[in-house]
Length: 301
Image (cartoon, rainbow, N blue to C red; front, side, top):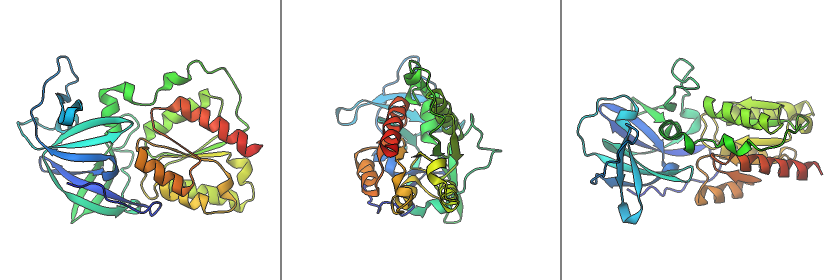
């Protein structure tokens, strides 16, 4: 299946691949997918995590296979199914699923964010739910699934351990990040780096509303010295937020950093076209702090 569907940047749309596990319907952002392969023989790995089926080598690239049914607590019956080969956070991983239904183009506005009863900081496997063809399709949080299996793939908080104590409280930062866990980790890391004045928002729309509010009261440059945004967010994604910010004569002066698991070559080109000042992939929290330091320094000079 060809997953190289081109979307114009900043339109607030995404392509969702719908697939099944048992009788349930799930989705994944096509931007994370490299290809879809028929089932192949897997080599088990001793002492691996229970959700890791093993490894296989398509075209001489060794790849870990994750059993999504086990990750979601479903009965693990024998099935061949398909492998969805993904690339995010600079990792190539195969997710074993039952079958692929198709690809849908949707707006981030149509994705409903699960409420706190099922989407807590520590225990969420979903980033959103969307109604397609009369049924509910759950968009899975693949980054969290992988981080739960291998914590080293998440934010490398250890990158900041040797950072000298410093005060950056005079430089407020606005963050747009829909994952409660990642928002908490990014907040903790920035506070460690001395950035204690933070404006936290849960999606691009909330971030844009806050930026416009500051602009209207005339104190935007005092309230926000840098914007950090994820790409994948309900209501408004990070690319749309970037486009809006960089199309405004006043707001575009504020440095904007895209911090996302989706930053690959294609996404980097999109971000550059939209005017992002820096783009970093999610594990690189140490590089994020360095980028913020440089951008704020330049913008305030």
